[in-house]
Length: 410
Image (tube, rainbow, N blue to C red; front, side, top):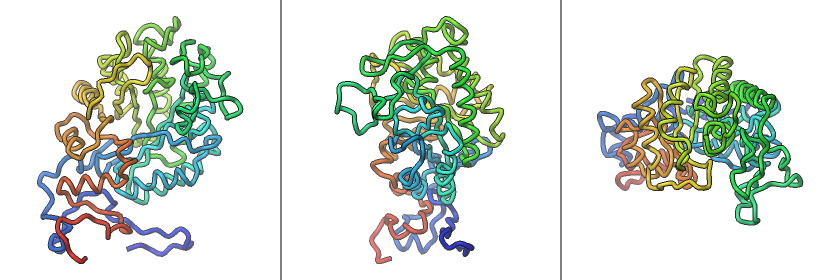
């Protein structure tokens, strides 16, 4: 039952249990065609809860962070509220807000979200509060674009000869930097090699961004260390040619990320999980490898990371990616099996409920992240449950839309 509130504008329906939670159907629901019978026993792991530090995810189908290029000066808008809420309303176990810049020049494009100033907190808090009404874990990915910063938003791809965003468009072409002065390709800006002072500023910016995310109420913070952005640029020998304590050896190339992790872990409440998304391989000879990912994951576990979100590529245009359904699952499986105590997530061309269920059921990963498939089908959780013969809670307002196993007038 939904309680009355002092301000009618704050009224919302109580969702008990939250949408996306597996529940046993009643005899009436079976007779009306909402379920064929009782839920499978045991319940498929895809719809079993997952404990992550102090949190319990209601299921293991999670929204992957995806840039929306819909902000000005980093501020979240009504678009972001409606965009992320739709997945929470429809049962996603965790919703990850897109890569959010810890510095103005840390954005990928002028239209990316930001978390470099306290003024950003209130807009993000609105999103968190609404997601929590549906029992969804609210997560945010914080990052720095590095040498791939000051680029054009998605809607301008293919409209010009380069990816560079100009000052007139809100870009910062003269303030693009990375571990070394090596451009991603001829279409991107030439970065300046970072000074030690700049490294110190970036480290603190990540810690401050995490503090703001915590103040906004996010349950999970993920450090973006994938796809050729700044943190991964330091990890890969293809993009990091430094000769100081932040380049050269594996220990040196991983130093900054580990310093950031330890700094964030110190200021985060102990019950809040810390995730890291990583490109598990460069897919280029001489670059970052799956073995490197496993070795780094062991260090990250010791530093206080709870979950490795295993993606790949994005750091070198020479990459040769063997695209196929679930092509990155192998990396999540290695982390899960070779780093005891570390949870892992699989992402990349996981579209069908059959594959999503298999990845988790086989123990290859603890959860699956879906990106484009969620954009195509925001009700993916409901569809997957129906296809797998599992009865789950729908959000109250959409109850009449529940799929049936047979026709009835209800």
